[in-house]
Image (cartoon, chains in turn red, blue):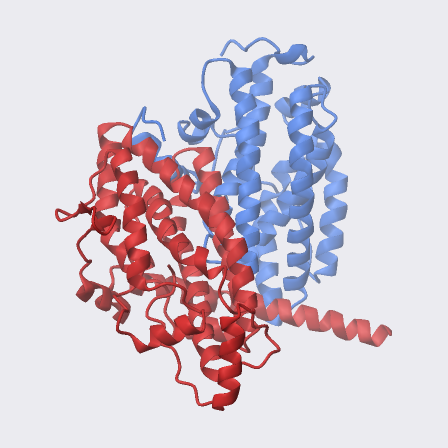
Amino acid sequence: MYAQMIRSEATQDDPERLAAFQARIDAGEKIEPKEWMPEGYRKTLIRQIGQHAHSEIVGQLPEGNWITRAPTLERKAILLAKVQDEAGHGLYLYCAAETLGVSRDELFEMLNSGKMKYSSIFNYPTLTWADMGAVGWLVDGAAIMNQVPLQRTSYGPYARAMVRICKEESFHQRQGFDIMMKMANGTPAQKRMAQDALDRFWYPSLMMFGPSDKDSVHSAQSMAWKIKMNTNDELRQKFVDQTVPQAEYLGLTVPDDTLAWNAEKGGYDFAQPDWDEFYDVLKGNGPCNADRLEARRTAWDEGAWVREGMLAHAEKKRAARMAAE
Amino acid sequence: MSGSAPVDGAVGPEGDTRFEYLLRLGDNALVLGHRLSEWCGRGPVLEEDIALANTALDLIGGAQMWLGYAAEVEGSGRSADDLAFLRDVWDFRNLLLVERPNGDFGHTMMRQFLFDAFHVPLLGALSGSADPRIAEIAEKASKEARYHLERSAETVVALGDGTEESHARMQAALDALWPYAGEMLRADAVDEAIAAAGLGADPATLAPGWERTVRATLDEATLAVPEGDFAHTGGKSGARHSEHLGPMLAQMQWLQRAYPGASW
């Protein structure tokens, strides 16, 4: 789940139009870019899609950290393909956001200035090769939990972007699990790496769903608009229920002493992550926040001459074409 | 090395010459692919990030095929991964050009262009190799390489002919990389033996085509072709690599070296 703590906007529109809009959503219609929508709907979506897009882009960095150290040619190729997919997801999502009246450059600038966030998970470091497994298995796994229902979200361009993204994400999760399998069944050092990766990524993965939102007014509005399809707690529970048996299959131990099957609710009881740490990460105090932002800003600043050069050349070509006509 | 038996009954020199030649093809793809992969998440525009990763992916795919075949030809039980991850600098046979550090985006794209303009006619010639395996791999890589060339040439033109700054940066990149272009085009004993056996192309025969592509593109890019034809050599023979290859291999090979014998 790449969208966390999305504040929904209060909306000041005419109650009749709002009611008609809500009726369309309730009837399962898709809202398309040119159609009327409440300002709050538009702004909330920009925030959510933008955060998701930024997460794809920043998410390249912890994996890029291992592309140059991937242990085999095949692993290197798979990781490259995955990171390329992620940049592609960023592209679809920025395009979806652009249909709401915000440019990609504006969104980048908001990311670089810290005004917009990306998922907290990418502020954690990738320290061993097993982390490439854990990121695919847990992080992409958690993302899928949220994104599969978002294929049915009310905003057409967002829903369509999600359909394409989900196809690729499930491949990502499988390759992550495959890395974990190799490691968990490998040498003692590899097993240790696999367990260590699970230890470090378990709670940050649970945080990806955001804090409990059962009392949140913002969530209720987003759910009514079908921008958000499930509560954070529902998705977190589903993730834990899916992941615990996989960890058992791998022979790894989920770092939670309280973890227990609860037959009554048909799901696991599990410990909450440290929400103070989550808020610290959101405030910019995660282990990698400064490094990630610095890398993005550097890429943006050092790329300025390239963007300007390409634009200047395109302008020259256009002028020459017009002169010739 | 004793030289292994000819593979698939193909005509040609001893296996060790063919092995040498396949290493050149594989190492160029591997080293350049690795260099491009260093850009991950750091490109100037999202589309360029994607294109760099895509080109890197094609090249790594090529490296898998060339090195896989090299390992077969060698016949001593090594795999493509063994060749990629367990050889030291002196056993690498890539051109000096492809091991040059990335520099700025202009350097990376100029290096790519100079290489692509050679790679395309080379693969074209190899598609007609008397060794069907070489022909098959070249055929597959050819399509990708043509796309790489189209893209790198377009970028060189756009940035050469862009702003004053982009022009200056592209000219600086060209001037810096020019002395590394000549190694591609000069035949040595391995190239000659391979060409004589009909297995590969004499790079000297590819030089005029390379020159035409390069001059036409640089002209459109309003860049001045550097004077002089001095060429650094020692990459494809392995006689003298630059200081840049070692650190790259140290990073690339680290896991395999630190945890020998593990399966990943």
